[in-house]
Image (cartoon, rainbow, N blue to C red; front, top):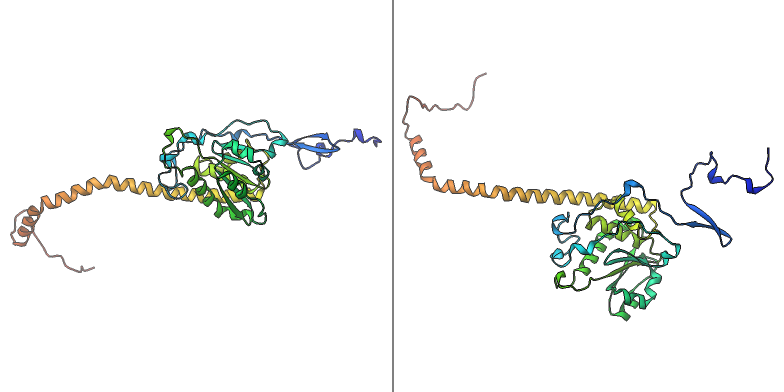
Length: 314
């Protein structure tokens, strides 16, 4: 049997023999199909309560990702993470989203809105851009507003493995640059990280930052950023790069754990070593007397000294 009308034709994605299953909703509009951005969050991606960001829970040596004295200037309240999924609209990709109270993610277009930058109170405009897109920069806007700006050039996605630690340290250097304790009530430093679209290289920075500072695994850090900015493009190449970065972090944490364990053991051993040295000096006279007795050749019925032959017959 054949059908003469196209309206009764079963869509390709709904055919039982079609190898792919549709996961997004589509609606007709403006003469073409527009994908409605939806992001079903699997149950296993539910974010666990993150550890408080304090010195005791930071699993890396101080001075690597954070400057010395960082936790005396930056309190755990700076790292409040939104864990609820928000309804996403397509137009939101042109806006910037808050990932942490001091860290926003968006596109280069937002940098052109000087009034918005001033209202938000940003203190650093951080461009993490494709090396070829030199026009993507916040230096002009920063000069006008009297704030700081940095450009980080990325030749290729794989190069981010070596670039991310430097960017994370740059962020932490900036937010802790004030020497005044956080308890004085001053407002936070605030950073806007962006690239041309806000969805590629710059989007991978907050993912890596959450992995380092909140001790989140990749499968938790990536959804945490997705929940705030759904348009983030985490393709296979980006995920493989982040997995490599996670492996490096795991190795660093293992080394640091071993170092701290060794330091703890050394502190526990220190008192007993002191006792041994004390005994050595206290009983030195008794030890000398015993050596003199052994050298006199005096023999006793219960103690007989015999020479030890250097060899023994088979």
